[in-house]
Image (cartoon, rainbow, N blue to C red; front, top):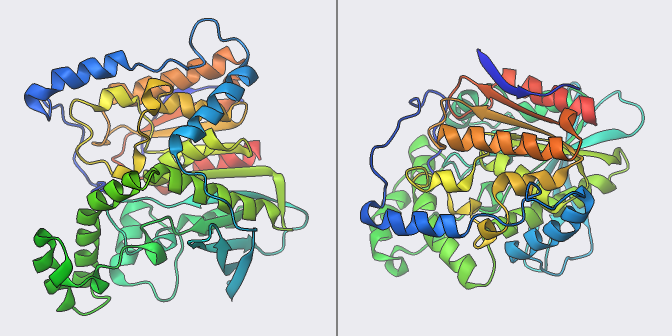
Length: 409
């Protein structure tokens, strides 16, 4: 696989899978005559709190100001339940174990999780959160990264195309303790359209719900129908979250931080050596987690790093509601927020043939992060690489990410 490294500094909803078309330039803006107004708004709201702004010299002073603001915009800070985890099952594999857990989150819900621990390792282990993608596949959560004897052919095929292998298993074999959760709206926490009464559903959903009821549960056709309905309900789910006074990213970040609480407290794990990584939705979850939580010491964002302003013309069409933090752009762009992890080590992997982002947005984000780390005197702790692939996290990319975590953790 050919990789082009543009900055290698020393020492969604409907997301395309590998095989998607190369980048295409769109001659006209998606919103036609409305675009000039929105472009003007973007110019008016250019981020004001970047560390690159003149007059900002102290990284720590900037973080003390910017991180609480980032958390505030997430609009989700519920009272935490006492941290308790229920162990539900334990599976022994040849060179690691898998513990199935339920982690306390809030009074309203718990977080389903799988903890992978390598066998034969002595001493405290570095701990890593492995964050799964969106890919328009809602039936699966942790299963995207972790195999089991019960894998269906559609799941195995998806994992092969998106990742090439169950990479959480490859990571634990490198000597990391690895925690994988089901994010809100996926896997065990997915919307269950099979339980919705078609008679009371929105009119445009009724026929699809009736058809779902006629399909064999667990079949490829049933999985596709559930995923399709979950995608259509994403809009209503997002509206409801916003109307209830929260944001979707706020829920994701809270749950990932709660998972980090648990991982850091495991007796096998060194709480001073924590990392995270993920593709696509897992990538932006990583970017937002490292913005919100200073405990992450090394991270890899794959397939979700851009300048948001560059997305407006033609590159919002295929993105999920799960990535938008209303109002944040006026203060921090995505690379600004991710840079809050400094001096934590950050690797950004971009897919040069990714159709979800314009090339100038991807390049611009990497260049901005390089400038921030350079201004902070931390050049060696940031790397940006471009791979000549569509939106994916293939084994070659995984090996770079794993080596990055090994170096800094």
